[in-house]
Image (cartoon, rainbow, N blue to C red; front, top):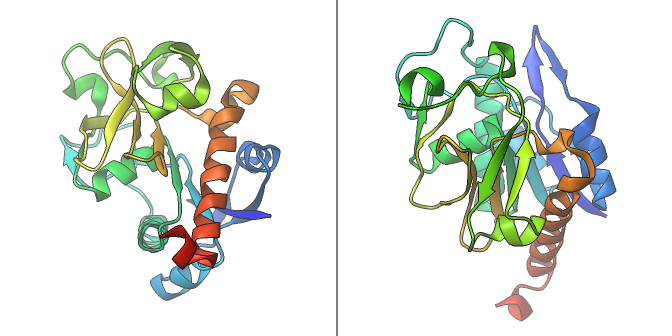
Length: 235
């Protein structure tokens, strides 16, 4: 099976993961492998076991930050921040497909040189409330006409959940925007060949409508695996 690593949260010395992520990968035909929290050397060894990586939702992003963190956001635990960054760098260096969800999308953008609003509601003019903790509810997103994401999902517009306080301010040059909220907040990014995707919403909690996204991702991981096995043929 195609082996998909999944990062976890880290609170009070415990790793935790919603089962939705595991189910989404399994339903898409992948083998979920839960990523440990460990040092750089161990993360590179773990990355060698993977065909693809999902970076899950999480705490605040502090790289590329615009503004100060609001009172209702905590800085990321150093253990998770270091572990996630090491694993992500390792997978990217090995050309493993990556899917970033919420914090995962923001981390991808920041690592490639983009910037992040510390509090989009406060720092972006005209931004709506995007945090369910602050009273936000589901909202529509518009998918860019030429985006891979629109082709993957087969829709122009859909309703998504909204569970974030931070948001992308400037998109890293490596990516392009593939979806926006009605207020202009970036809701999805992608690279040129859709091997790296990021979504601001929690796709793992949206059921069948998001299965094409996870199936596409597992399919990209399968292709990458075949290329590594047959580098001459792939070239």
